[in-house]
Amino acid sequence: MDFSLSMEQEILRNSVRQFAEKEIKPVARELDEKEEFSYETMRKMGEIGLFGMFVSEKYGGQGMDYVSYIIATEEIARVDGSHAATVAAGNSLGIGPVYYFGNEEQKRKYLPKLCTGEALWGFGLTEPNAGSDAGNTQTTAFLDGDEWVINGSKIFITNASTSITSGVTALCRTGTREDGRHELSCILIEAGTPGLEAREMHGKLMWRGSNTSMLFFEDCRVPKENMLGPRGHGFHQMMQTLDGGRLSIGSMGLGGAQGCYDLALKYGRERVQFGKPIGTFQVNAFKLADMAMEIECARLILYKACWLRDNNKPFSKEAAMAKLYCSEVMYRCANHAVQLHGGYGLMKEYDVERFYRDQKLLEIGEGTSEVQRIVISRLIGAL
Image 1 (cartoon, rainbow, N blue to C red):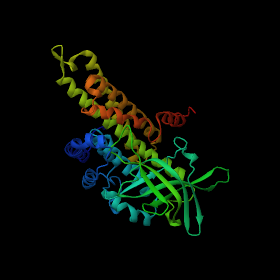
Image 2: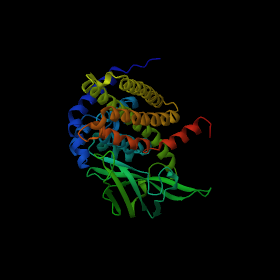
Image 3: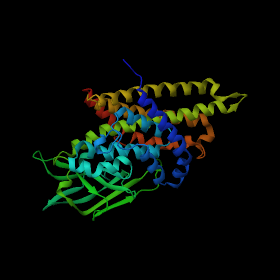
Image 4: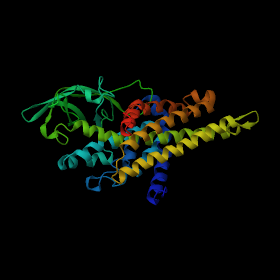
């Protein structure tokens, strides 16, 4: 068994870490405070190749393995959750469905700009009344001649209302199956299409520097050729996309946990009470030891899941485990880090406060922790 990374992966980690420290860390706090999406750092992330990392060079991607993509996302999350969310959603949820399920024409039309970061694409799954129950999608689409007519809404969609968003993939009810259940299909809808309104959401607890949107479709017409893959395959496509997305969320949890640990360790060495650095007190040293141990375990399970994916082996169970464990490890690390900082950990001038807030979505997005436990229970044959 070889747990070492390749030289290329080590170089990638170091270069992304340096980029995050130099370009993102100095502006992260201000962007969070203003609840502002940064087109400048978005452009820079595109320039260093953080989009389309697992996409073939044929379509403008980097042609890397999934482990490399996860390492890059992890290093961005180590500094800021908002920028990591932009990268994770841009790759796994925006690019992923088009790359894996699109036809040749769709791939050549949309992927090149998405892979350079010149454009973003949304993943329209969640609705006001269809969160964990994604099969209860209310958005409808019916064929009128050579066009799909779409009506409905989506909510909490990342990257869907920026000025560089070029479109969204929307899960729609396109009919009724023989068993009486909804026929669900994915349809590509370009930004600027009449009847599509993308509205940015504000007042968020976390990821305040990322773009989160509500989408409204009112007699929105798109060509029938905008169907993504075969009709009626939408739910399967979305679930398969979420398997990859869970690895992205896992990497955000892992990176965020590492960021919390780094901040706590540094503060523990600098803060002196009773004549000693507080990190030398056993009660705090044990917190740091627990954080280091859990981060190591989280990295192992996440990288294993990515290795399985890269080697074309089943990875759904491991993806759910990695997403669940990494997100909850970040919760524990953020909690320990704030506790170790004491009152200063509650102040916005200390980055650990932002990490504490950003963590919460990891237990909710891409399937809640409760849903992950259901998925795992089914895959081990318990349900």
